[in-house]
Amino acid sequence: MIFDIAKLILTYAVQYSPTAGDAGQVLRVVPYECAPDVLRAGLAAHTLDFAYQFSSAEQGDEAIWDMRHGIASGAKRHIDVYHRTTVEGIAVLGLALSLPPQRLASLRFWSAGLGDDGVQALAPLLSPSIKLLVLSRNEICDRGAQALAAHMPRSLQYLELETNRVGESGAQSLLGPTLPRSLVYLHLSFNKVGRAGARALAANMPPSLSELSLSCNDLGDEGAEAIAASLPPSMVKLDLSFNEIGDAGALALAANLPVSLLVLHLAGNVIGDAGANALVAGVAPSSVRQLQLTQNRITQPVRAALQQAWTKRGGTTRSF
Image 1 (cartoon, rainbow, N blue to C red):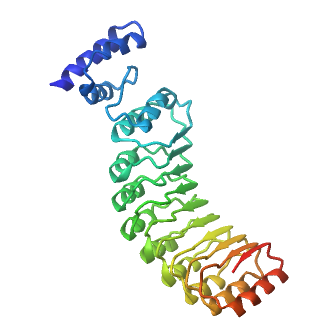
Image 2 (image 1 turned 90 degrees about the vertical axis):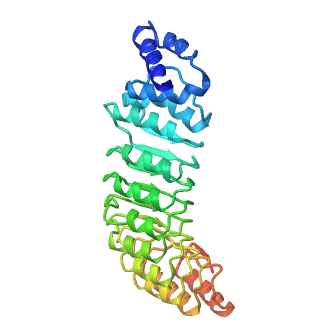
Image 3 (image 1 turned 30 degrees about the vertical axis):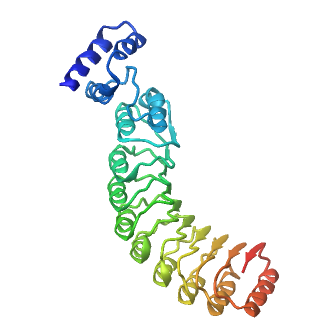
């Protein structure tokens, strides 16, 4: 009933008011508690030309509302939202993105509290033109990761989902066959992708990936071995810090480091003397200039010898 009344008011406001400002004045007579129904009515009428105050009062929703005309016209190619956003805001974004022409190049929702519900609403809206997608610090779990995998833009080059709650099940979907081959940057640190996630990534490793960050993901030796065997020749930076990687994983990495690698971070693992020696020897023929091995299980004599060897080979930054 409220929805029907809101739709009638909205129809009058849009069709019979001389200006959008007049339409806004008409809509302001709608009781505040009816605001969601006004929004639903507006979306049902396929229009964004009305005044509105979100019932959530979240800054992320309001930011999307302020950008709606630029998004709908295709003039706004980069969307950045750094505040909490609800499904109301995503609904507005959906309508704006449904109106041609669309040339959206990047979408960032940083610490917006999307959760799985928000990502499920957002994923089908992702434009094929998007090259950069950042959804970090959004409490995304496996369900959200699976929804994202089902709608991943095929031309995506930059994907960042750090500090979420993606587990092995979600990671297997996210890093499965739908992972864009065009990716050059993948950042999934501070999740729980685990061994299964590492195996999925190894089986679907983008051939031009240059930066991979998987710190704090419970990879273990098994995960490190899988990734080591699939590292592309384009890799420039690899971060596998704090993953319970031991000598077996370090040996696998040492044997497979691409010559293009510049930065290797393996701090906070359980690598011992054998693994550390192999890594320093393994990077010798490559271009690695930054090597981090702090907080491992390297003895002091070996650490001192590694520091001397690293200095001789010309490494500019090392931390053993």
